[in-house]
Length: 501
Image 1 (cartoon, rainbow, N blue to C red):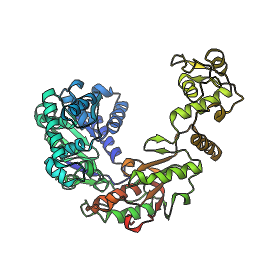
Image 2: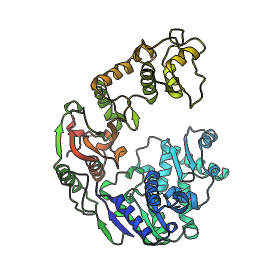
Image 3: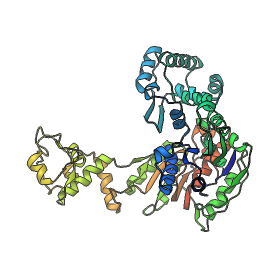
Image 4: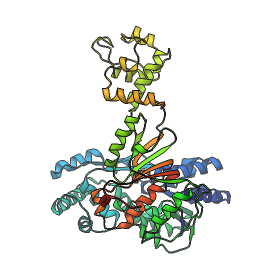
């Protein structure tokens, strides 16, 4: 295997995609190239780029641009009916007298997903990904359930799957590993992205595929390995035998942020030593005591904290300032409310609205005869239809007109939402625009970037008890290296519960 180390913003994925392009340009058949990514989005980005450039059919001529799980699903010829589903977990719960929930779902051949939200099931899965005993994994965890409970669920879970002839997410990988010599194609080239996030089980699969391939390139950055809790084992990437290349120029990180990030990286004990250059811009690093000290009136912003609960005060402050934002992928004003408010203002201005907008409007209007005629609460429209204010009045029971502005017409909107929306409009924010401010845990932002980054240095009680400081160093390194221009470091109130930059 040949390693490509890609520090933040150095274009690691672009490097791999360029190598794919050159390989195709050199005449290597596309069916002989595999591009394995950690996420479906990344795999499809590589596939679609290659397809567009060389006029290929993405699905049929580039069949091995996938995640590891999707590759396993395809080559094993697994059927949807063979996978554990939500109803199976419910049935298992009833059988063993233990409330469990979860689902392994396959929406299409290329998209294998897992949802397991019970701590015991998660622990069982983690042990298998780490290729170690359940007892060892239990002893290393802080799970509240007793060992007797964990062992009981594990035995019942395995027995149920065997009896019903069903597979879960990790079964798919384990079966694939055993069958690789028989079913895996012999690739001319294989690329594996985000290698620092692979678990021991996934590393075994990668090494087995390597034996089937003439050339195998793995790319990643050990300094950005922040998924140890999910089974990732970065030491496998660091200690991998073979040649290596370090991408040496960041196109994202300015000089001041780079200097701070390098100091943090040097605290990591278990790492591959590497240096890279910042972009030719100064940037800034500013230390502040709270979010209220930052003017967020313009530009793109990314606000991060180690734990999700630490963002709750930020939410209240941003609402007070009248800023639209997104938290963990959800807008601060729901899409339904946006449809209703924007839709009503469109109607007042003489424009037609969609079926979905009309339904949203009606859902926030009283159906007691003051806003909508009795019996007309549910609109009878086709989804592709549009409708005007006059048509709503004449055919669909609307009793009010354009004399009412949105907060008068939509009388069932909660008062807190009315106040917040009014504040947004007064601040000059575009109510229906994509939020330019995003809030997330540091884990949730890996791979993202923004002109302006706000990084909280508070630590949760669990993080302060963490024995492996390398994990914390890597986490905050990832956080600060999302910065394109300005980094604002929010210092913790409690010195004993802070990460010291």
